[in-house]
Image 1: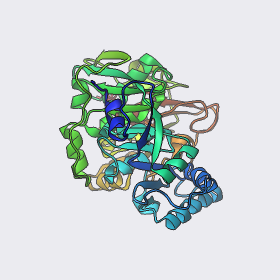
Image 2: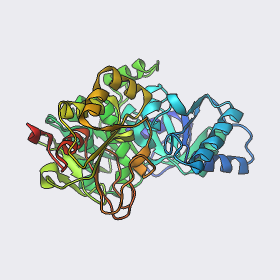
Image 3: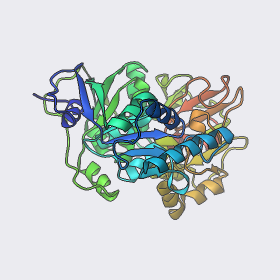
Length: 420
């Protein structure tokens, strides 16, 4: 039977024969993830279930990243609860402080996720790891508690939408633009409980970080997972981050899809998602000139070293516009260190940016960049719902790092090519 990537990976983790979309299967999980917001709820549920140990202390990851460094007493108490649980359960992969960062950035860098894995996390953007050919998806905290205790969970085998990108990506156009193009086409519910499987020559040309950006926002189309084949680039990335034994992985030729989409990216402009939904997508020139009060470069979507390099290339030798706050947040200690070694942080500082520690921060309206009523922000994050970054009367636009950098320089939404 010819299988999609989703079905192929699920089959690896169950004794049942995966024969049809919609089938319910029990699967062993490779890793269970929770953060400082969601782990306390999972811990409470786990105790209520009567579980006294997790299934494997080496295959549970707890990352304190959303409201850390602790922004207030409540967040400090949340982290303390998670910290004490990690000690009690001998959790190997507990991250807080200097070795922590945005969960979906550090887990790939620490070699904890890779091709053929099943990852479940109490965070909707767990789907990021599909960029490394893992079946990765978010679950509620109660389901995460059960997975922590049992090492398995159930799935309804998702139908798959195949999305092919042909052509050559223009300058300043990358993974963020490809996923915005997809979401703009199918809508925020267009892949509800379906897997998005990405391919084509333009995807083959993307680096692994760009693929993770796309997989990260699969949930913004309602998808259960966003998946890429594991090619040589994937295996090289995994080896460079300490993983061994991974192999090539792809859907079978002739696999059946519920829907197929095709996009020609030749001449594609940078795209911007306008308020207040990620599917309100327009070419950057159509919103050129919209003034902003704040620009954010960071998050699990676009806070990796490649994103920082792209933004620094645009902003080098220039200054942030008067009255604009540019906040740059490397997503991991590794990205921060590399940006420091390459002089990228100096470029941002010289331009007048604020550089924060690796954290989710303003992405979810947590801290370090909350918007007041009437303010407008252009961000490299993944959601622009009303109230996402602060006031219900604020507006959030989403774009890639090059557009974000150009916008910070001019004070209004700008195509990087317009800077000359």
